[in-house]
Length: 247
Image (cartoon, rainbow, N blue to C red; front, side, top):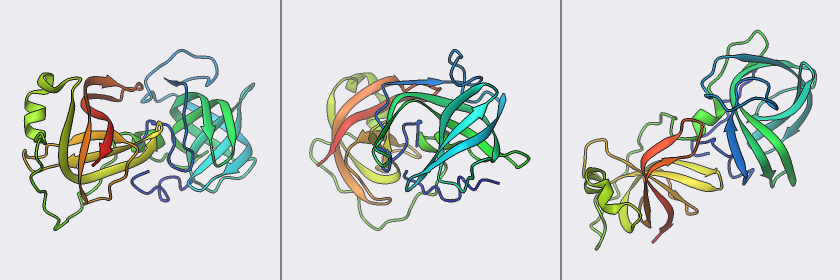
């Protein structure tokens, strides 16, 4: 079985996604696909239709593996979490996200079309967890413990107040402070940080930023609040802080 997920460390989500720091990708278009990767209309990434492909070429980077594969008469590129894959291997996957104009800085290459696949395995093996699903807000991860206190910050909005009155803050630039419970690095060219401030039970805010916060570390962010933000492929946030900066 291709050991895709064993080497995937949290704080890589994404989708999608859309790969990670190693790729520093900046796709121009993202669409979910489920059938022939080069000629179908968008569909749900959870679609269970399977694709059996032959591996024709393998390109390895620090955290990801790029595969040129053949399916029937189609030949295209897919990207998966770093794995031991050999030319000639037969693999099966379901779902995926098609990227147009995807740039891998590690490879110094732009892929006109690249498919981020989900549930991939060698033919006959069991499937593994979706790469993109792990990238964007689906990954379950224990909240780290930390003795660092969340101090009151002048002008900061409590997460409980923000979630209780989202319309009040829509489109506004505000300050929040909290402890990092999860971080996904460089998905769609940005880091995705989840914070909580203890003001509400199990209440967190997702933040996109170019800055980095370690798990369990407390930080103060200033950014703009957006509501009903849809990033495609079923990944939508009722509320999110975008373009945030760590103060």
